[in-house]
Amino acid sequence: MPRTAFAAAFVALVVGLPAGAAASAPPNRPQIRFNSTDQAAARAAVLRRADLGSAGWTGGTVKPNLSSTLSCPGYKPKQSDLVLTGAAEADFHHAGIEIRSIAQVLKTRSMVARDWKRTVVDPRAFACLRSMLSKQLTANERLVSFRKLAFPRLAQYAGAYRLLIAVRTQGQRVLVMVDVVVIGRSRTELTLTVAAPFAARAGISQAEVRLARGLLARVRA
Image (tube, rainbow, N blue to C red; front, side, top):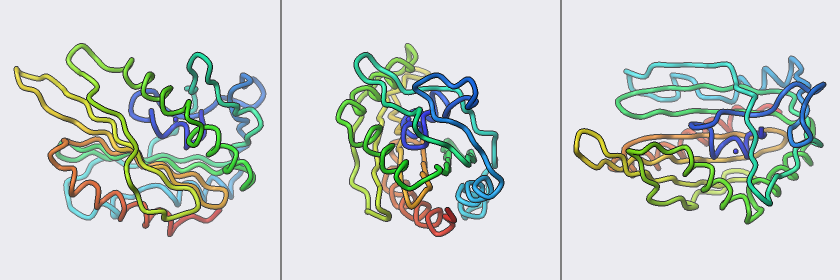
């Protein structure tokens, strides 16, 4: 799931977000060349508290973590020819639900297409992400499933995934889901990650589509 946003998306809740400084970036990380215009575009395309409707939400914008990388034996998607020009992130919590929103802007549209092909379409990506996520679980957590979800094609690039985890707490087994929505339009990559009780899945799925539409409406780059 940097990773740019497409790669960062899948592991946002467990291992952070993209890349390092351009001058010292390893071969498998994008170049970072932020500019004020694309930084403003990224900030405009992340969640705001008003997007969430009901009262009780806490959180807001946070500094993007640009440190982790996506890598598995036999699969290390190339990132060094990608240039990240803007990045923003927001994180909100309410009643056992966490929603994280990431917006990243690349230098060109072709870079977004390249990134999608390497980190979403490549069949090795799914197995790698499943492996990475499994390794992050604690002794009280068990991976039940990790699968693709049906999701409306709101933009040229759109996809969704669900991680289902069984958590044992206070002698009870609780199912928790982590949904990841990845969307690309023009030079912008958007990620929406939602962690919530599995029992709330119907309402959460509807909210994900609504929030994704709202974020896309604010894409500037």
